[in-house]
Image (tube, rainbow, N blue to C red; front, side, top):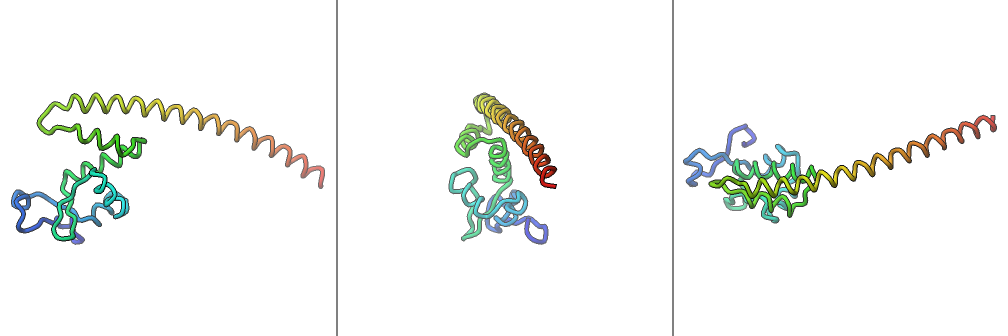
Length: 147
């Protein structure tokens, strides 16, 4: 949408005649709370493919959905390569069984990885907590002696 809240569509574009809504780069960045640089980077990696009218990037509803998936994938720890692979498996006309199977396989691996990381973090927190308790006791004893 534009600054006034209206959508933007190029006047001479067939998609505009069909009512397609486009969003400018600043609108996308603001909506997803990411930088313009990040959007350009994802475009360079082939994760999103905005239309160009001159130097203006115009993002479709499809680009918006793809960006949402990229950000979700990154949040859960998938590499951009994994995200692109999963999105590239999508077939508008097909059942997408292959995409779902690959997504499930990658998700199971990632979940196991995250669980191992959580276990390691829980261990580190336990060790740090114990160390801090020992230091507090020693500090309390040292402070009592000094007084």
